[in-house]
Length: 401
Ligand code: PLP
Image 1 (cartoon, rainbow, N blue to C red):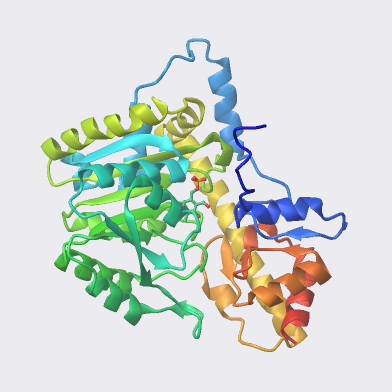
Image 2: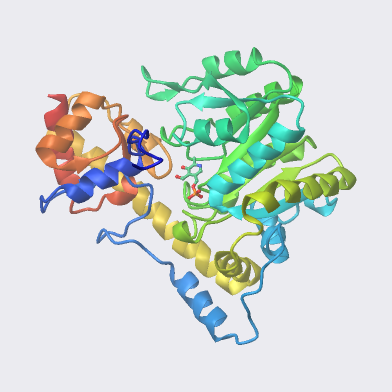
């Protein structure tokens, strides 16, 4: 008899489970809009040319080896990642007030940041927007923080519940941690305007709340790395402290390489160096040190202006294709006379459209049209193509009429 006999079967991950169900469907017209990964117009995963090129160079460079890298990761990668998110001329970087550690993509960066805060920060409550990426509450709970929520999305307007957000953060206990999606909020695709960000910043600073940015889509949202980093830079500019988790999964297509970084902006260089010494104590017993390959690719691209330019062009290409899918889907619903105002499809930003379809409509679309998406009505625009837009529009039309 097994010592694990008492185990009950755990449910599938609600996001990754969509793909599991999709894979089991024998229909030739099936469409997977659940995955948060970019697809080409042909529906294929994309490895950027600039990534292929750098990988070739790395392989041909016989001076390279596979030794362990430091606990905090590659020094060049860390320095350049901080510059990418904070801006090359950021005073916080120039004053050595930033510590950056390479982590296992965005998830690992959030987890390391969460564990560090649970261990060393005086307030152990983190506020997450409603809704948020499904993994956030689990990551922060297991890190040892207690999870609360603040209002973010208003189903009635399919937009931002700005009043609710200000009210909830305004009544959070002083010192609480606040998780903010830096851009392209997942799953809603609804972001505050820069003016609203400025009000959020003032509120957060006046209440001494601690901002923790999740930046999983820099450059992927608008097509501009700088534009997508504006909210973070607004908070750095006031001289206050904050954390940022960066992911290179989407913007460089390095999903499975697990490349990311956690940066903590501190009041002084002295504090930053003590923070870094404690981050090492969080990381060492967790996985000792991060992997070398993906971070070497990123460092090579960020270091070389020609490669960097190549990247920005390819990145803009991905963002533009997604924006064009939004327009095509909107036009297709308009031309079918589908009831409802679908303008949120073109207003929302990033990889996902939060359609407003309910769980019943979603399961109708899956059963009748073999279209797969999360039950909250979130569809990945990256999984769409000009060829599949009509099918999706037909399905949505049928689901709402
Ligand atoms: N944060 C958000 C909001 C995300 O959407 C994702 C990916 O879907 C992540 C973090 C983390 O992704 P990864 O760990 O692959 O970098």
